Image 1 (cartoon, rainbow, N blue to C red):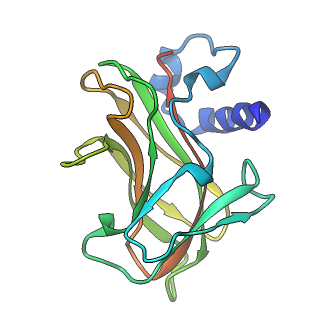
Image 2 (cartoon, rainbow, N blue to C red):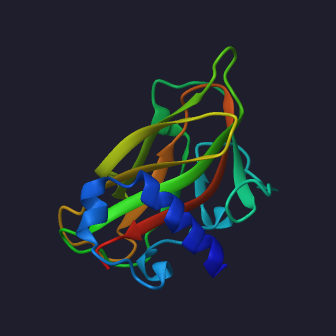
Amino acid sequence: MKSWRIAFACCLAVFVSPALVHAQAQPPSDVSKQIINAPAPESFAVYGVATKPGVVKDKNVQGGRALRVPIPAASDQPWSIGLTSGITQPVKKGDKLVVAAWVRASTLPDGASSAKIAAIQINLSKAPYTPVFQGQAEATGEWKMVHASGVADRDYAAGELTASLQLATGKQVFDIGPILVLDISK
């Protein structure tokens, strides 16, 4: 288990902004100390769908498993279907955070070459679900890592934040592999 976390962190380093990488002069010997959520697809909470999505095995994604989330149609409210991964540790004001996910569109919208992820973000875990920071991403038929990064605007208790993906952007099927939230200030 530890080896896939280290491999994931190495892949993540390619995508993290130079300013955030520079802020950490020397990487920790154990990257798992920076992970502040449960990254396994089985642990994600999916909302807005009638039936609970299943986990599929896929040797081509980090960890070998992904959550398959079918989206029946586009919505003008892309947050109406999505998934969350709770942050299990406290976050301090000024902490540099990265949320990264392995994603693939196993079924694309008709005629499209990619499927839009409306938001990949860190947000409050209860109403009003205000984002701390967010980004957007595209998924294709191939596995890739998408990410967003930002800085905590205040102190948050364990469980007060969650990582989320907003997926209701078209009739499509997303496969979501591990999602890691890293506090690279640790």
